[in-house]
Length: 203
Ligand code: GRF
Image (cartoon, rainbow, N blue to C red):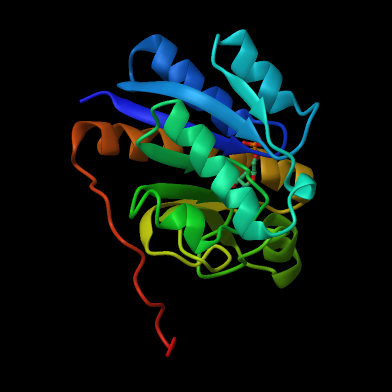
């Protein structure tokens, strides 16, 4: 069944582009119903418009609370007929307002092999730590930072002489394939909705 997808972004949007390209090629049975950014003037919005997808800006700073911001996101996603939500470089942590509106149907892409290197500097931290293998992860989203149940991972080697840019580019290329692959599996029903689980060690 066609996946009715909403994509949340905050920046460049290369993962969004991979999704849009796969939809256009017919390799991903999805409709991107809308793209929402919490920042204006980001490249991801241009990518959406170019593909003929509604591109919305909902600035988080305009809301008193994180919950109020998330409620505005839910309203917009519902208005556009979204059933699953993909976070593609969306730099906000979700509250239950959003998570409960799409139970088990929000997925995120992260540029490391979680649970290693959560947060915003995963590629740099992998380099600094000296790992020889890093990668990317697609996971269901819960209220933590990059902490929901893992769906799929792809390993990427760290090569001698790598810097944040060269390694980041290699991880990004893997992300694009992994994310589109997981979304295809969701579209085909191979991967289903899953409510967030408690993390190991959480009380
Ligand atoms: C990706 O590395 C993704 O894993 C992370 O944010 C980055 C977004 O990149 N969550 P892009 O905007 O899709 O190019």
